[in-house]
Length: 410
Ligand code: DSN
Image 1 (cartoon, protein in one colour):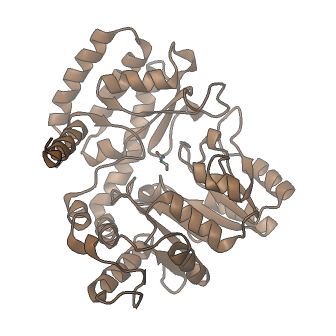
Image 2 (cartoon, rainbow, N blue to C red):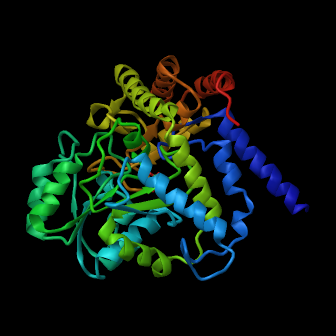
Image 3 (cartoon, rainbow, N blue to C red):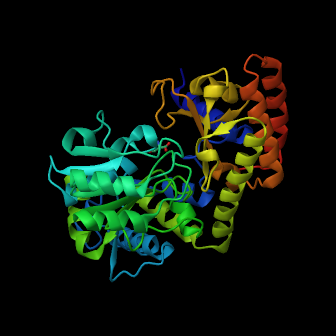
């Protein structure tokens, strides 16, 4: 077998899938060709363990400039003063970024308060099967059982009872705005650090359509490949006084050589995020999500928290004749990619949960707007309400392909 041609053909097939379908997994997006060019550059050849001007290898004169620029731009997109804030752009992933923050600020066994994964948190916010739940003593806050909204009074009550050294806020499946000022008040009342994981909403914050965690959080982690439209990876921004501890936790704490090609690509996505077009697109992302939500609701699809204020929606499948997994698979059959997801207080199991999580960042990057959202909302509602209707899915797949041709990528 010619392995290289096999690899090439699989890459081409995946790109075609991304072009011909509707990417509606809310944590996915389309990075720009400029981001790919940096990622696919010869920077990948270089070893640069350490930080700008403090490296363990020679030959880093250009890499130092690139990484410094990436750090400056990371602060600039959030309008932060480098005198007060510090950026580390080396984390390979969001999980690693969170691990580094915990390592920098705490000792193993210390108490953390985080959002329950089942209510919309993240594995690294204390899941028992994750390093976080194994190394630290987590307690959890959830959402209100009726409204499915964060209940800050209840969070304050749990914090008072548990006395954590750190509170982590931020979510992967929460459709409403997060009030970082209220979280900061709770953290201050118990003397805890506040860490905001803004992986999903970083782009929305830069676009001014979601409140910012700055200056409220002591440290903020985010991935760069979601609403920020950058390369797969993460960054940490923390208060200047914590910078040295955070840097040591990333390297040599948990990582070795940084991926300088990816760091250059992060700098590209930050530079692109400074453009007015990026901000407009973030507004459109939220507008699109709201339109999609109202179309689904009007067509008999129940949404957790009755809709959305950000880029994502959570469909409650319990009144449909399908599980979340079946729903996501039916949509995928028609070329609409979403993911099965737990809903708050889900009576079902994580492997076959009752919800479907979907969102608008990637569709918006393609240029889709109001008209397309209404059409796509109708398609999704029809598919979920008629799980036995294979002909319907075949018809929609054809129509959907026509639609995607009008919004080319790459
Ligand atoms: N896996 C990511 C998501 O899909 O939201 C979170 O890390």
